[in-house]
Image (cartoon, rainbow, N blue to C red; front, top):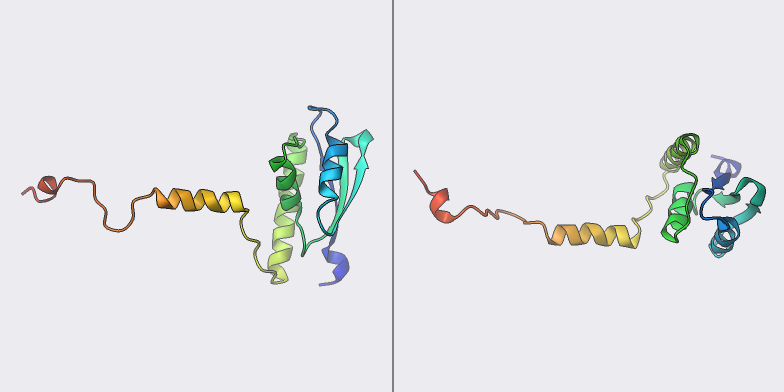
Length: 133
C-alpha cells in the first residue's frame, strides 16, 4: 500500500454549544505527535492530517471527547464518522498493523468488572438445596 494511502486528511466538526471549542481543541491536538491541525472557525471544525499508522480518526475523536469537547452529532456527521472509522480499521487490518490497545481507563473498567464477577464453580445455592432429592 502506498504511503499516500496512509496519509489522512479529515475534518472534525464541533457542536454549536458550547461556543469557542475550535481554538481550544486545535491547541490540544497540536500537542499530539505527528498530527497537523488547521482551525476552520467559519465551519466550527478542525482540519487534521495524520498518518494512519500513528493515529486514527476514532482515536482523535475519543481524545477530544475525553477532554470535554462536544462533537457535532447530526445524523449525517455520525454516519460519515462511522464510515471513516470502519474504512480506517479495515485499512489497518489489511496492512497487518497491530491492534491498538484499549485506553487505560477502558482497560481498567474491564479489569474491575472481572474482579467483581464470580469465577469458576462458584454457586450461591445453599448446600442443602443442592443435595435435595
